[in-house]
Image (cartoon, rainbow over the protein chains, first blue to last red):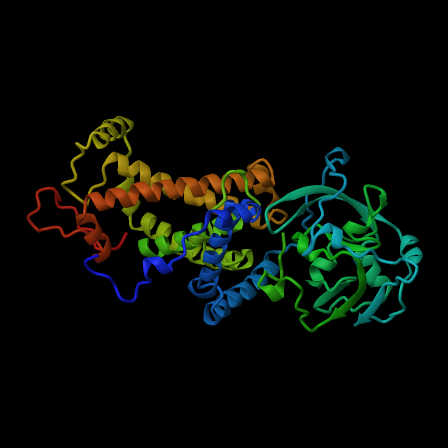
Length: 263
Length: 204
């Protein structure tokens, strides 16, 4: 041996795995999925990118982008024609059941207990008495076969029915000149829409899908269905409605999605 | 205007790839996180609807300027099919002459007019996806909402293809880069090719 790096471990001190060690731990070694390790490594790499290198989440950039998004809310409100109807479709195009979507999985849905459920009303409303499901079922129904469009890019045709929201708001003496209307879900979900979209003829409080009561995963007993907003603006399992002039920041807007989200 | 457009395009394409990843059109195709713009879909959407303003305003200004000054008429037209074929063959066999930067050859004319057309269609399909109710007639133009998404994707692919060729060719003829950066090729007064035409002094 001519030269040895004094800091390098002596060859003899580096334990070469004993054959018996491998035999003993064969089971463990076999369970190490190489693909998973590789994937994990990549995810770690991606995570490091998220931490430092991606510019989207830095304060200043995020503030500029959110300002533009707020500006786009105004542009969309100006583009919104309250009389323009969304295309409707024939019943044979209806997808059954509807496509599930929430920020959690379908098996985590907590069904609403209809024996205690009541629709609560708050804010700029004259008659704030809560509504039972039977009272809501007794209201005139409107049916619409419309396209549901998710911000992710998928869509399907759905057949929804229930009381027209404008009629309902008029019935309870809501201030129709208020700016916003917020819908609180039975989970911690809340989304709000502008009053003009709430009063659109194709905005309903849906209680039925394809002629049957909406089932648990899709919003039983009550959900919003509006033909003029993206999917996430249609809260399911509604337990309360609020009419307000104070901008209510919804679940997805808090995370940076656009508020108006009009179609 | 050219470089503003280049930045807007890169923002639109990078964020568009991230948005695409949430609901892919082709099962085999996901864009790696390393090349997209936006950590999560909401950031990509924010970028996309920010970039759209730059793209549209710069584009409108560019089109108005090109038409009003006669720049488009002078540089892009006429396009003669025979020249296109002949010069395409010359280009592919590396025999295409590039003596005069102030004059576009027929292949360039077709590519530039083509990509401008594709960007316009891209804005239209984008509007259809963004406002499928307000502009429902645009959606039917593309055969439905998913048809509009597909058209938007194919438009992106064409623009990316153009950019690859465009950048590669510009790098092959380095003089053009200088001209692009400084606002136009240097045309000597006694240049026999200029034939008295005023030298373009504006940026692309």
